[in-house]
Length: 546
Image (cartoon, rainbow, N blue to C red; front, side):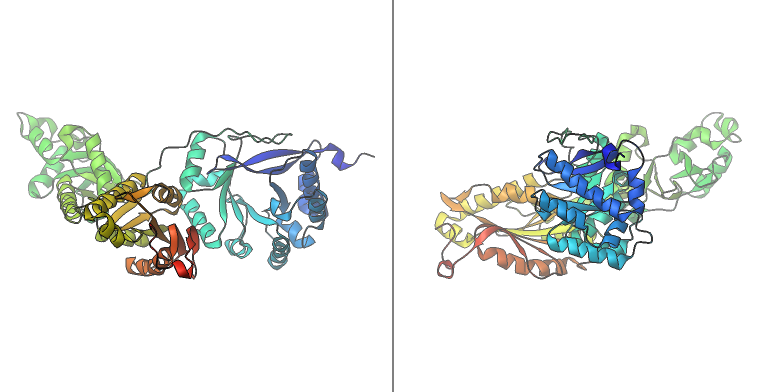
């Protein structure tokens, strides 16, 4: 009698590391030729455990050396308490447990959470890596996810269309020390969204579909251009909101004329539909000019005012002043003085903004920024950076605040001269500014001290660009020290607290020899040394450049 395993084969799909652009692992997928073994496995933990063991043996026959992902249902783990069949297959294959990631998938309904967590602890204790699979397309409770503390979280590709959800999962990953992966990526648009979301790995038919033979070569689109930050810096449009003069879209021209002549401060009227959505914009000067012309009143007074209006120009209520200017710049030149309608997420008008208000405020801001620029590097000072830190804290955004300076700078000035020191400072500032991308802000707070505010995913390339460069002053080799504090939402209340968290990391970086980089997390003790070596006691007083 044939066994159910006779009609079962396995397919392999690459998991792609989005940083190295190479294959990081292979997920092994059961592919029954007849029947529905997976549906049976969902109800039969022993069968599901045996499928996981068979997957390992199938990979062994293919002689692949890549790390492996095997799938099990959450209920299987809770019932079996540790997957003895899988562990035995891993030992037989000569594999190490940490080469295998167990992808724990839904359903979680009716699964005893305590038993599941105990089984996860058993596997983790032996060295297996744990992945929470099917997030966004399953029933995994958030509290259970946090208690599992998986090494990897796999999101369904449908979530990349909801950036706020992905940002929340990214924050949770950072808190738990997990990596973020996206599965089911099928288009280059999704790939660009996955990169923008900051995921570390991904899989899907775009890179390589599941196949009977493991593949190490995958298709990878060109890296997408730097994605602009989700929130552009600049004063929010809410700051400039004025009440809007609203009339129904069916209002006759005579009614609009009466409103304008009776209210000299009103610069225009918005005609809205019954839901409050702007459909036409009536500019004061152009409208009154049409009405006052020969036969104008007779022609238009009783006709709909919409005939003398223009399509409305709108921005969302969360826009910045710069985005309003973009809308104005894209329009016709004769409409630059028109009010811009501000709408909520339903398209309803909540007010208007005037170009004159924006230009005045932005000009004042530019004057203030220019006054705050460091004359040596032409970079903004600490006030600009700390103000942006406070804005990101208020917006609930995760950020990384870094301090950088030149090691033994006084000795550089004394040995090479202040002119060489100034030239070095200008060069470092130029390098930092050149390495900055997206929403990264660079400030020069005086002397050889710089502040850098960045998103966490932009840290590594920025650090490499400045720390790996060969610096010198007056023919003497020079090194730099970098200290970074990661600030998840809610970890600090303002820029002062962020700076206080950064201070001990700065001291730790300066205590290292050579180009150094120390990274810590706000509110947590300890730090990670990413560059540099400890200085022996006898060498503590020696200058780094000799």
